[in-house]
Image (cartoon, rainbow, N blue to C red):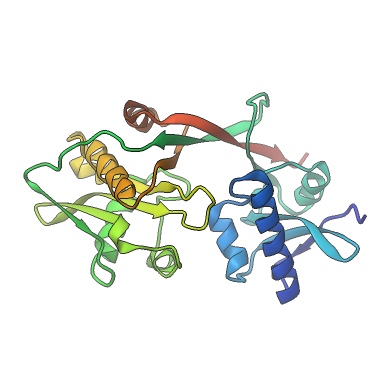
Length: 278
């Protein structure tokens, strides 16, 4: 087996197919996602990126994707860790932030912990305020206003605080997108809050996800996060889903309090480890 990792900015068509097959096999083995959705989409669509792979008898048997140039965020297929890849990647990047899944929390170079929370449905029922209108997202009309609301809500978030129209439209055109599960709450003609849900139709357990939930800072303090979470979960239950998940940062105290009040429990913790070239 070739112990070295190969690095390329663009996978060939056969390499891309091999990586997709590896991702699918890994997910079937683990019973969960093998790669973060954003990074998986880079492979699915054949986009350029910092692709790393290891081969055996000419076939790709391990894969990782890095994002960023000098300071890179890296994830291996399956969420594991490899000393050889770390050594090679630190020859290319001065700082490597490495996502690990199913962490036991024993390492001391953790810079971020992302928790996967789960809930059995149905959930609490919370009514929509009398001065608000609950409706679904309208493509071609709501993009600009939703981006403004969502980016304001996640101004300090590393992934969700700087979405562009291209980021939103790319997801709207994904096969899983369903506008009926993209809920908008309007107050006085403004998008005050939103809850975007996703049904994982192809997963054996067919579960639902609170994909993005946010409240405009101008409307915070009115319990709208609680309203939208309840409405999103009710929509998922209406779709015949019995199990819901969401991701939340471990240090997001207010969000943690909200989700736990609904009965969400911890299923998994993923940790981001920082390594620096010496």
